[in-house]
Image 1 (cartoon, rainbow, N blue to C red):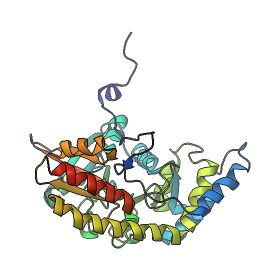
Image 2 (image 1 turned 135 degrees about the horizontal axis):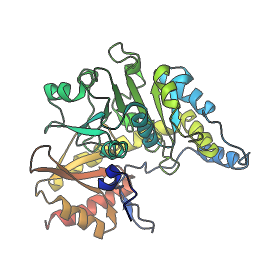
Image 3 (image 1 turned 90 degrees about the horizontal axis):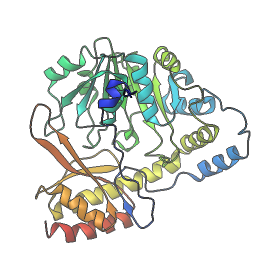
Image 4 (image 1 turned 60 degrees about the horizontal axis):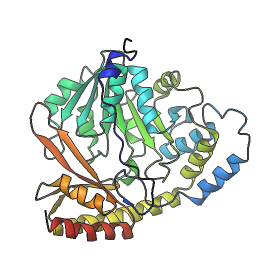
Length: 361
């Protein structure tokens, strides 16, 4: 029987998510979830929605959510496109702007799902290599991004944790395509972005910002995200989304989460304080810690034995993310550990186990 899959799907490896152990007892610091629960208003909204009219389809435009999100970013609701997690926003973007063979560029290392989604679409992917300071070469950026249909930029970046300036981002703006700022970690930045670049004349009408509720709003298990873009872009993207891509319970919960900014900001404050403490403790154990504007740290140990440290932690039921990235046009790799900021008790456990492991590596 002939293989029924499209050639590009047959050849691709597929995206590998972080480990999600189902049994209890783990300290889970590997997938950048928020360690604190969502607002009580979210739970109340879910309960109310669950007793509502679940026998009918939800609002296909998620109007209630769009109104609240628009207020946070000082735009009209027609700038907002809700989605089933911001990963769906990324899928919508590629389906909207890229054909087979069209060009997609992203800084590397960063979120490799961009590459997976491009492969599904049959688009070509170019990696814009970052140097040791997590910056790109401006001439290489213009060469790759100028003719691109889409340039994806996670800002702040994962796994490195750094954030790029508007001047740097301008170097990635395609000549005729679209620049996508993936701001999954935007609420943890030193100066959280509130849509300013959307109105900057340098970017106007050629930029899309994506956001998720998985990180700062503690709703990774719900799956809700949204994009913000000029209405002309949003209207076109609206054509390719699933008819009812956000269910009634998710819409209600996401709306309540955005309305309770006080709860989110209180959790953000705790996470940043714990991040600061962890960043100060890890060098005592031989780690170099990159400055971060996210809810995680990118670290490298002086031994270079990151895989062994990861395995040692895992044996003690502490999960972090061991990540390895082949350098573009080289036989070398970039590797290290990405550590999600958990509760203070979880970080204490991490540091205690690490102290034993690094003494023997």
